[in-house]
Image (cartoon, rainbow, N blue to C red; front, side):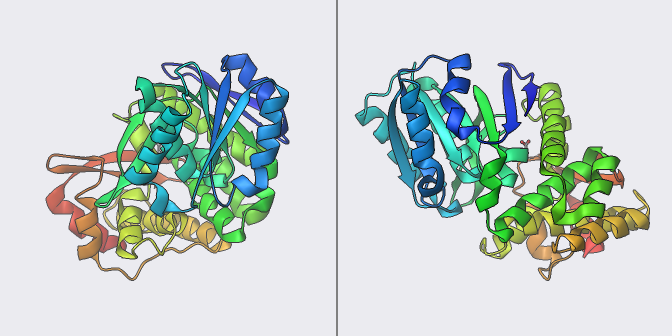
Length: 350
Ligand code: GLY
């Protein structure tokens, strides 16, 4: 078992180990004192782990309610969010109670946003059950719902009380969902850690889960404690996302986030090499690893479409978009780019 502290404005621990759900009550007792816990989960995850978590919480003396919504990104909207708030209000959940997000990124994001806003703030715990949620969305307090206009356009920075990464939950992921998280894992190697990248290049999907997940969380925790509110360094975590979000949107979300981010990373790296920001070898190394994970290195969507989407990127500020550009494996930079240059940069990466 490994524990990593996230030194955000309200510090908390991320615990990585096996069979943590069975002991959730013990971990919760260490950080807060609710009388009622509300498990928020989706129709895929709740049938697998809902009763284990619920029994563990009851054994620790908590009253337990559960709210389960249909799995999928299309549930991460205002309707589900309001349904969660109404459920909390109808069941007289108070500020001293606790929400528990049991699931992947959609569950974590919407539960965090409900926690940030219900009664102006109630504690919550993250129990991520996908690789992507473990290494990225459950850590760092970004909470959100989607609008019809785009993903994650409404949200808050609101840190959980504790994050329990139960590695056993990875065993029930489909290969596609696991692979989706791998794109984010590769991203940490490109951003910050050559040794991590080499480990992934060597072992591909057989990588050491304990080492890799803990390392990604450690890297993310470092970034969050430097820049909790996403004004600078944290923006680097969006490597591949400006173009990736465009690919996801252009496909009407039939291309998964991980696939889109993988292609987005390769495209921006090819563009970086063509404008002299990195050697072509960086692009070749990245594509080799992506291929080992059966992740894409390119897209058929045209630059015009991807450019349109880049204009609504959350990292756009006025007439500038902050592109994240690899210089080497393990070293990337934020490149504030005037909008008039973004189209030609995307084109150079296609
Ligand atoms: N998912 C990127 C971040 O947490 O900043």
